[in-house]
Length: 121
Image (tube, rainbow, N blue to C red; front, top):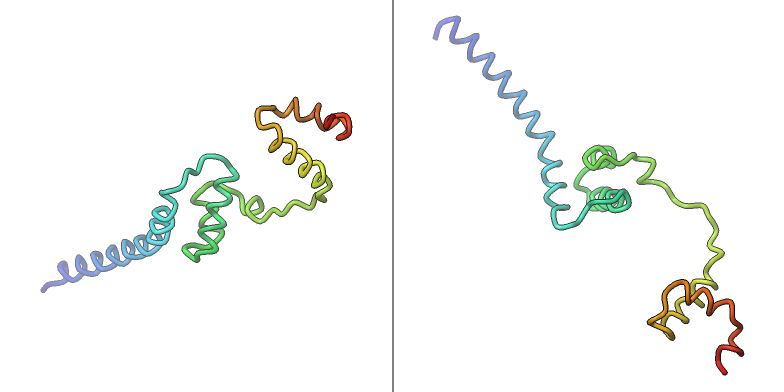
């Protein structure tokens, strides 16, 4: 083996090392994407859920999963601080919807305005 062959061998080893590093970086991404293939990821909420799922399962980090699906990390972590004041209204609306399954939201809104005594006659 002469000097030219040794230089070529060293260059090939360096290139092989770079390719192995690229492969090692892409392997978790491939595993994460295969995990998500069965889901429909169209809207931003679905993407946020998928990112959360991948992070919880430990496939990739939050940063990498957010980059893969184009979601900001703050959107993934966001927790609404709004108080839940509509719970009684929602409960009544669900009861009315189960009593009157053919009514739409507009009719249900009208039914909610009528007191129960008048409606039950």
